[in-house]
Length: 211
Ligand code: ADP
Ligand code: MG
Image (cartoon, rainbow, N blue to C red; front, side):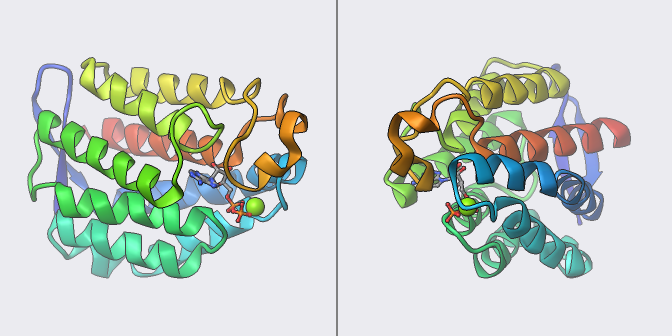
């Protein structure tokens, strides 16, 4: 099947889900060492491997996922991520995709995509008992949602995500393993936030490439 996206003016472009899956798996694979290094600094150093394992597992079944309607595809991808990523981030990324699948329509416009993404972020926050400002993936997810609401273009949204990941550097971690370090978590980028920024840019570039 194909999913659909909108440019700033609301024009819909068909996007192949298989291409999106391979673009996300490619960026995670290309940055796995970087993600691991970030997690080594203030965690246990498994984030790159966790994400790579999960997104490669999704890639393996890309054909089957892409054959489903968008809501079912996203739920199946989320379930696969829960089963394969592991760590704290597996259930959280899994929840993000599963909740997005639950909330989204088969052919979303920008407004319904934005609303569904907002609900998915709420589901992650509930699952993680976390909120914005605690140096987690939420600190990148929320600004991306804000940028969607503000009508920013895809590439602007990808830049917002990068800046938001950068902005986790001076934060003190209050959730996840990094929180065990207290003030020593300050001065390093949150690995999960960096993953979100990578995924957002891959999705955007993939969509723009197909538009
Ligand atoms: P683990 O911490 O179990 O080793 P990972 O290294 O794969 O798991 O993932 C760590 C990332 O998960 C963090 O960088 C952070 O972004 C995210 N994270 C951890 N705990 C939470 C939480 N409670 N809420 C939101 N995100 C979280
Ligand atoms: Mg870790």
